Length: 334
Ligand code: EPU
Image (cartoon, rainbow, N blue to C red; front, top):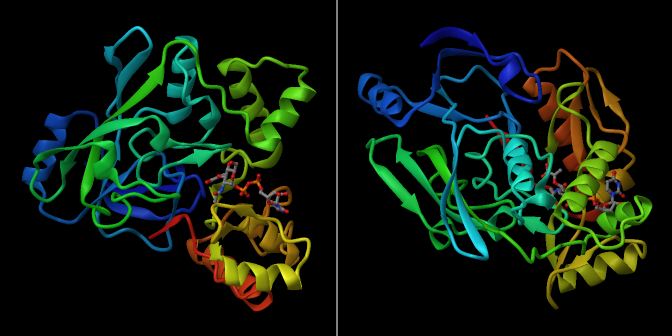
């Protein structure tokens, strides 16, 4: 157990808070021992790529370092893999590509760990984690008991799951199972940006490796690398509105960018709304709104969580004033 550990290198925003007690968890046995010995509240940390620390955490930090990638079962066409929650997400995507297993290629280069991926149902370029999720194993932090969750149990939604709501902070996710294709991969190039990138790369019949390459290129061109510029990806969720609100808004803003989810629900890109309010590329002391994607807030160095939060709340006020929509943070604010 480490005492007064700086979390600077354990969160992608690069916020320098300290944990009174911090420990790496490498096995289920070790976790069981910690749960017996320490009765204080605990917080699980993965890659720290979706959190904003606004103060020193009071809980014991359990850093998920449970590793392991294995085949759980397979048929002629499908394979189920079982992955340790502490594995790096993108390394697992690369492992799947090396083995020619399809399903996660659109989720290439998302920062963070495998154990954190189901919590907010990570998604990008037309695919969400729920599309390949087969189940997960977790330990209940209060009782120490093992629990298994099926895809149905997980109650996935857009950037949402039971692990983010009723079970928030209650579980340590030890392993996640994914179901992937072994052949006849379903290539998903519906997202316009992927098609454009494939055209640019002159690839007309893309395989899963090509899709991954295109996604990596798009992400690198739009999203800041947390190693160079502190950030946690999209800071806000894309809001959803009903048809009445949509019609009213579109009449006022004819250039409104939107995706129709069904006849009565429309999703609006928060990045566009923020951009329209003039925030893109703006800086407020040590923090700012990223110049290539307004949905991403960045730490230029030395920022506190409160600095980021102040910027976020000014952006939320601007968007609300102009469009009548209150944005919701996607990042976990602690
Ligand atoms: N847009 C602007 N200005 C901006 C940013 C975006 O006008 O500054 C417009 C774009 O031109 C485009 C639309 O907004 O018409 C959507 O932009 P983009 O394709 O970049 O996607 P997004 O909706 O902003 C979402 C996810 C990303 C994910 C991409 C691709 C959320 C909250 N974000 O962003 O996820 O990579 O789609 O699928 O749903 C993340 O969660 O951290 C993340 C990066």
